[in-house]
Image 1 (cartoon, rainbow, N blue to C red):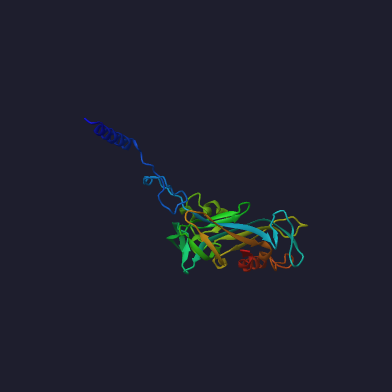
Image 2: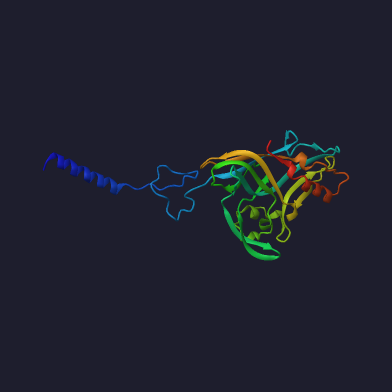
Amino acid sequence: MSKAVNLILSFLFLACFMAACYEPVQGCLDVLATNYSITADESCPDEIVDCCTYPAIFLDVEPMVGDQGFSEDSIYVTLTNDSFRIVQAMFFIGDFNARNLDGEIVEIDEDLSFTTLSNGQSIISSDKDDVALVIRPRVNFEFGEFKSPDVYEAFGFSFGLNPNWNHADISSLSELHILNTSDSLQISQEEGFVFARFDVIPNYNIPDTTSYIISGDVSLKSVQFDTTFTVDRGVDVYLPVFVDYGKWFEGVDFISDDKNQIELKLSNNTINSFSIN
C-alpha cells in the first residue's frame, strides 16, 4: 500500500476519532440576549429555563429638592417658612412605554397572569410585569426585559399601579414579587395599595413623624418625556429621571392645612415633580 494511501487513511481515522470525541458547546444563540454566545454550537436543553438572559430597562432615580440633592437628614423649608424633614419616601411606578421614530409604542416583554378584582368580581388577568417600588437607598429600578433594539424619541411610565395591579390578589403572585414583599402598603384588595408614602416630621421643633399617602385608582398618573435614546442589541438601558420633593410639597402649609388637604396637594403635584433635566 502506498504512503499516500496510508496518509489518507490515517487522516480519515484521526478525523473520525476527533469528531467522535468532540462535545458540542451549548449556550444562548439569541443575538438579542445579553449572554449571546458566539462560541456555542447549539442551544441549551429545554429544561434550562434561563439559558438566555435579555436586556432590561432601568430607571435611574435621582431625588432632589430644588437644585440640591435630597437627604433624609436635611431640614427643608416650605414657601410658608415651615421647616420639615422627609424621613422616608417611597412610591410605585410601572407601565413602562417607549415610542420609536416610526411612532410605534413598545412595552416590556414580560407578561404575568394573576387574580385581580374587576367590578367587584374576582377574575384572572394578564398584564405587563413591570411594577417597581422606588425607595432609597436604591437608585436603579428595573421595569423588566426589553428586546426591541431601536432609536426612541420618547418614554413614559405610570406613577402608581394600574387597576389590575392595584387590586391584585397578592396570594396569586410569587412570594418574591414586589407586591408581595410590599404587602404592608396594601390597604385591602378592594381599596388597593398606597401609591406613595411620605414619612415626614412637619414641625422640626416637635419631632413627631406623620405619614402622608397617595392612593386610589383616581391617583394614577401618566408621566411622559420627549427625549431621544438608543437601545442597543443585548445591552441594558438606564434612563435618568429626577424627582423633586420640593415640587412635590409645593404649596403645602403644615400649619393651616389638614392631613387630607396636604395629601390632595401631594397628589396634584405628582406629575410636575418628575423631570429628566
